[in-house]
Image 1 (tube, rainbow, N blue to C red):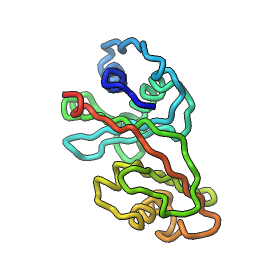
Image 2 (tube, rainbow, N blue to C red):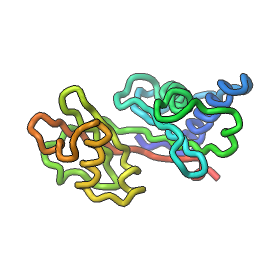
Image 3 (tube, rainbow, N blue to C red):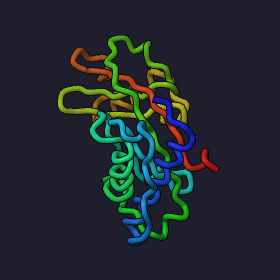
Image 4 (cartoon, one colour):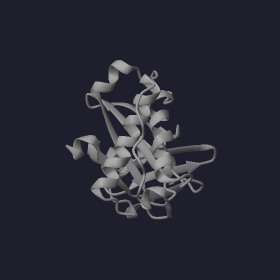
Length: 183
C-alpha cells in the first residue's frame, strides 16, 4: 500500500478532528473518498507533545477499514494509553500526530533479516508480547541487538528472551507520516 499525500493528509485530519471532537464536542470528520482508506489495515497513532511521547496505540492486525482504525486509535492514544493521563483540551496546540500504517506481519527465524530503520518487531513468548515500530529504533539509534532487547523489555521479558526456542519474532514495515510532513 502506497498512500498518496492527499490520503495521508486525510488520515491525519481524521485523527486530529476525532480527538478535537471528543474534547470540545465540535468539528466534523473529513469525507473518505479513497478506496485505499477503506481497506483493512493495521495502524498506530502516536501523539507527541513538544517532541515527547504523549500516547501511542494501534492495531497490529487488519481489523477495520484504515480510516476507522485511525479514528479509534487516535481516541485510544489520547485517552486510553495507560502510560499517560487522558489528554486535555489545553494540550491540543502542543500536540503533533504521527501515523504508522503497517504491512502484514512476517514471522522470521533468522534475526539477520531485521533491517533497523525499515522493520518493526513484534515478539511473542508465552503470554507475553511486545511491539516496537520501525521509527523507534531509528530515533534512538539502536543496532539490531539493542532493538531486539528493547522489544523483549517492552514485552516484560528478560533482554535475551528473543533467543529462546519458544520466542516468535515477526517483522513488518510501516508507512510513517506526521503533521510536520504536511506543512
